[in-house]
Length: 254
Image (cartoon, rainbow, N blue to C red; front, side, top):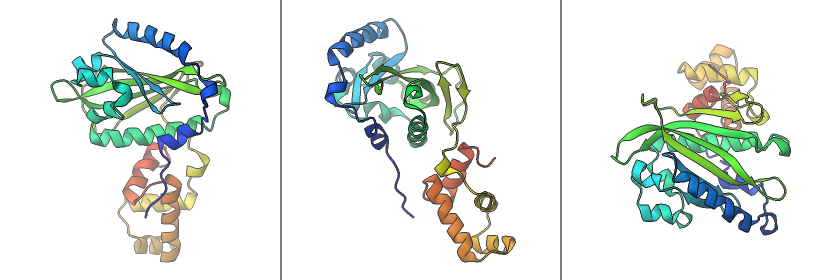
């Protein structure tokens, strides 16, 4: 089964920022402040321009801590997804899913609340010695356009004090205004499963096939397969294993 997977680019396009909405003279001054700060900290700092859909700046620490080519870091605007290249491949996939989920969560909020949240991740990344280490990455909006929409995102990456490597990303969302911490995001309405769909998903986790599930629940195999199809579509995944992982992440099943 192939489902339509929304991309981060599609989510950001909802911002509908125009050239009239952004003031690059003002941002150039603020960027210099961030660049100066980056020289006084061991953190690896980067900024993303949502309007131009590209990296705007990356600090030199990315070279010393993670082994990036210094020239590439200085010319980050022309390097595409350079910073993602040293993230563990499995973590990169999870990170993309979390970013999309976060975007969907943000767009479910009133416009005046959308820039209040900071994302905090722990994932694996290759260091300068070419070894995977845990890093802490924090991302938040630091500049808005004239209409209050997220325009510049800043991230800070540090080596995590927790170096017990895990195959699962840790993610926390912090409301910077209220201090509220979200370990998991509210389940979007379109991803909520019915009682029967949850029941079938739990039986799938037990290893039962559609025919066995049909017998257990006194349903036709056609009805079971239709429920399975609905589960995949709601969770926007391609197979039962991904559905189980996604449902666990959302707290739909435990």
